[in-house]
Length: 219
Image (cartoon, rainbow, N blue to C red; front, side, top):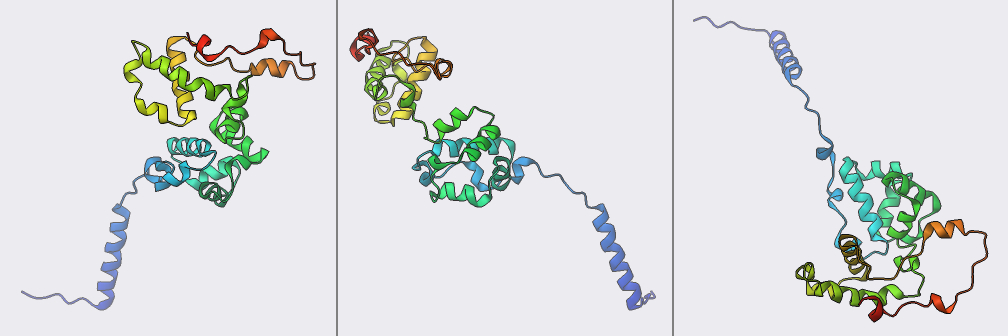
């Protein structure tokens, strides 16, 4: 059997041709948004949970995760830089210190009113929505005890709820009120009424405006 000898030039041409053919046959698979995500979109860290205003941070990350956006893309959508978001996450920049521009950007990114951003960033406290000073904290524990005595819902009220943060307790009470159509905590400030009353004289408080004690309201 005779061996066909090929010149170095011929061998090089065959190798080059084979390489080109292989590259042409290779098909590119589209990368889905889920595969483009990086680890940060899994949620906020234990350290970030301790930051004041971390609710907004978690909200933004969850929205970005749903859309398959990376951190830099989320920052651009809000109107800030990657470094700015990093400083919020590390506590270098306090979340409650957001500028009006950033608040507007967060509101547009999440598709919610600016007021929701103010609450999530802990700029406006939930207590600020109530007419009686510090009334919310006074009503939380009695409301939880009433929920615990409820024959239908009491089985779901774990004892650890009484040691939870006030914001968590308040959320559970609001959900209970929505499910049962009962009111366990004082009526919140009517925001629309406040807006309508801007520029008008605030009426004086009378005796009839006094808050109802917790034990009477919860019975």
